[in-house]
Length: 287
Image (cartoon, rainbow, N blue to C red; front, side, top):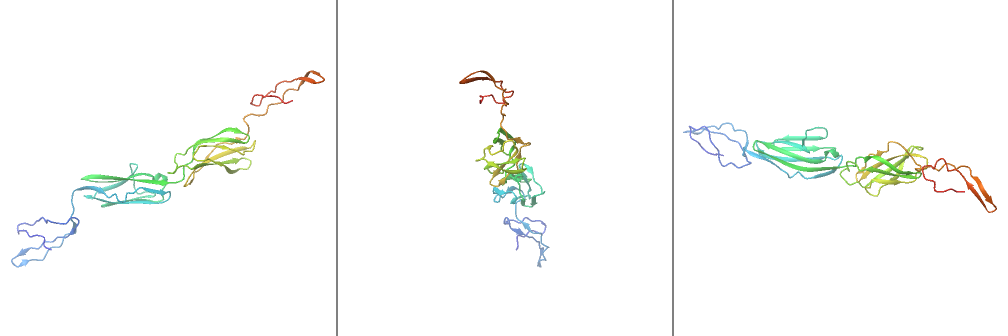
């Protein structure tokens, strides 16, 4: 299709009225009295577009992602601009490169981020950035990877110990796994058996539990796990065993009673106090 004609002394031309986005090829024929000669070879295809245009990121695929640990997610973005913008991906303002479970692909006018086998560390605010000589553009998208919680924080305190029970206290985990903590699961280990068995479960996310049913004189270890909808955390364990005993012992025996006086209907006795009250004040004597 003829586009225009120029004089013989002009070996250059500007072709007007192109349609933006349309691909064109061009060739030139010389003309004399005999008519047009054989045309030149055609140029390479050229798409009619601006040569200087700031980047614009297509945000249509940047939709917030909420997935379970182990699943994959992908962001595939078209990027316009002239010249072709340079692109990069960032997580929490740190640039991402292809490594381990992360694959980043950059080609002209397109950039793609794929994360496989996701973990909690892949959660956060992702940023795609495009830049050329005429400007820059950035867009953010949030990713939440949900998983079981991290272990509760210690120390795991054993308080109010008595012969049949005790009270355990701890602190919430650093990471709830992206979901609320539903409860805490407590287990006990009797050193006499060497087996972990259930000791109780909290009603909600409270961080203490009264443990009952201990055998007096036995030594116990305890551990606690945080629980959410995705599962149960690794445990927080007491570093040493605690003996199930009252915080005091029985008093030692008093001295042998001495008869001080008596008659047909009474006797007066005296005795020495016990050497030890067992850690609790003497409240009386049984005769």
